[in-house]
Image 1 (spheres, one colour):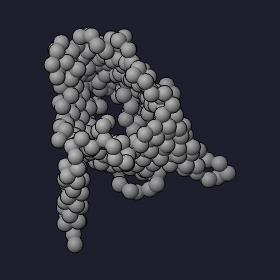
Image 2 (cartoon, one colour):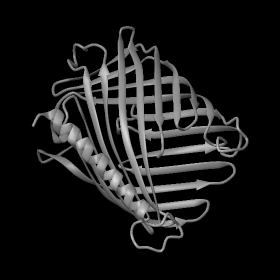
Image 3 (cartoon, one colour):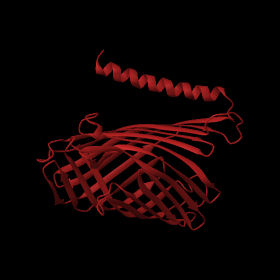
Image 4 (cartoon, one colour):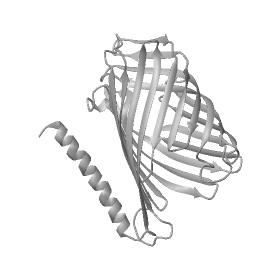
Length: 326
């Protein structure tokens, strides 16, 4: 049996599985479960030099199985999963990299039952899929809800992360480390904030979340090579619709970011790009288009015998995201 046939059969099996879940949910009372399938397509383009482009197409299939509030049956309250695959493709070879195509695969699963949350995440990134355990990152966490009110949510827990930590003890690579898990959110008429620490921390803050004009910001770490691994986004957003279903869905934004992209060439070599952007964005949630100017940044190469960084000139970038909920 050839690879093409196996690939088609695998996709067909996944579709049959999702359809069976949907039919099973429909056979039960509509007041007990709600099932959604959400496909998402992303495309990014970044100009690194005058003659070098980086293309980033990807696709994600998400599904969510949720118990309605009035349901009296036993079982988890929420089961959410997603499968994703994407590529980063350079338009030409770099003399030091000698690779043009990088793969990224992802699996995410979250189960919520009463105040308990279980989370599993597995990622594989590299020029060659499944080349080495160093290409993988696996997270398994458990948390419990401590605070649950209309304005404040707090979940605290912990788990294990399996990844290439770069830590060596006694000549052995440390691949599995314990990490905390924290999820905190707070909102009122002036601020809507959410902070999450699952392996690496990130935070979202929106000022004046109920107004036509809002300030949106995002902060996260892409690693621990500080300050270069600090990612940030700040934007002034306009939500022009005062009423209706588009009130909080449609927006126009102007903003600036600091972005970090990492690529593993093989088990010993990797490269990283960090750069600043200024952008404009149009979003109706189901479709988001962002484009602007990518300022010159830094390319960092790491290998077994050397590490160096060089400056490069950026010109423009474009990101498009389309999604739909069935």
